[in-house]
Amino acid sequence: MSNENLVQDLKISEKAAKQIKKIMEENNITGNFGLRIGVKGGGCSGLTYQLGFDSQTKDGDTIIEDNGVRLFVDGKSLFYLMGTELDFSDGLNGKGFVFNNPNATKTCGCGESFTV
Image 1 (cartoon, rainbow, N blue to C red):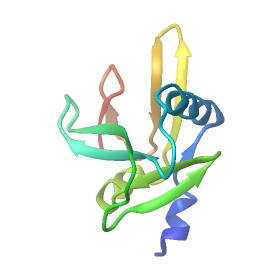
Image 2: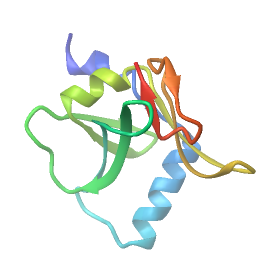
Image 3: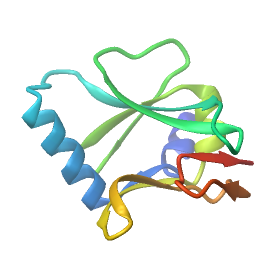
């Protein structure tokens, strides 16, 4: 399967893209920076999401551009994130990024960890 097919399966909502751009602007993050999205072992459900800005791609990364935001995703994480939409919530239950991940069979109460 090519990276182009995988790219279509990971999305960023308009609300999340707007918030990412706002954070980048407030922190003077410019140039070739992108948002690195990853998955690592840990948390109460087994896997946790990671977000952070990065200026360089790494071997095996897939670069995804959606709603004007560049994402860097390593191959292992992409496997767990297929079909996921990164959204942003500022509702009564708290403010922050939300992963709408169809692969998650179980999530913790805070939504920061999951099981597949």
